[in-house]
Image (cartoon, rainbow, N blue to C red; front, side, top):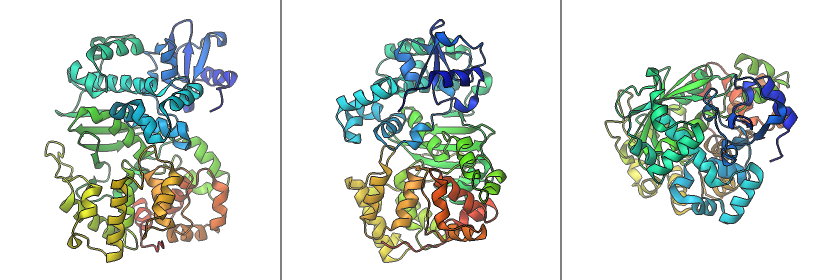
Length: 496
């Protein structure tokens, strides 16, 4: 990653440009605080500021978070969605809680590098190593729990990933210049959890944000019992490292309201990050829209729905399995078959988690799918065997699908499995792993949409590096959102 341009960053800060919140932080030497670029405070002198890629780097140098602009509540940097190198993969895994689960050695092993090399590369490029970045994530999670729940501080400390109460107290004071007690005293009544065991969060994103269209797209693909859609709220069961969770999502202008229930609060940070990836909340919509609108034939679609997101996944493995189940069948058929598998093989949901949203089961584990009897698969034998083959490959580790996977390596691993062809592998790469530049050139619906606009598959090359977003615009160009989502999952031939 190139060094930050001091003059350009300062110009952004002078203009309080919200578009760059999350891209970098501004550390003010005279006050000892760091802010988001859009902080409304008086702009400091240029000679008194320094700029850092991450909050962790500023914290490493002794700066504390601004109490006015709350830099910890900014959208995430789009950089980590775009980069598929070691740094990008590491940042996604750290946000997913890999350091809390396995430590820095486990993170390095998962990435395929030595711990020393990982620390050196991240420190050189970002100004902070993986442990410091994970510590910044813990502080943010702790603040969320302090301000939005009535949990005691001991439970919050361990839920956020801290090793001790002392470490929790020291970090909160250092990062926020306030004790946990002081942070809780300042919370507003509107931030209280709505029901016992539930926390309601506002997940920020950049504008423009076509949130309603995004949730409608997800709702049209909802698997009965695992997901639900009532026309305004999308709910989903999450399978998390420590247990299960349920999230209910509603879209706002520049945020998503997420009502989260978990069996283990230690999964909160991981759940939030997976929701953000599902909804593509860290995207840079202005850059995407500007690039796509430069093609005059695509510009009307962008103008019609600015800020359209390329929906991702909270669970890449689940996305891959669902893609295989849905091969050459209608969307309705795929949802029905997948729902039956979930009902037969998924763990029943704790009734305390499913409150009035029609959810009943978690998605089946790969181990159960790999060993499930024939009669549970209402599909041709070849596709049934492909589902089992994929589940077994994930279980044994020959196919890796997680936040830190290299999308191109994952694609090759998928294509090596009998029954999985380019369309399925590319679909998993785009939606499961959140790659922003995938175009399904053999997708019949996309081809029909291109034809209607007097475009060809070759024209898609000019939409790089945002071809995933262009594809979502093309799908939606066919009619209503629900119809477009259905059309995007109509039968396709995917040869292996």
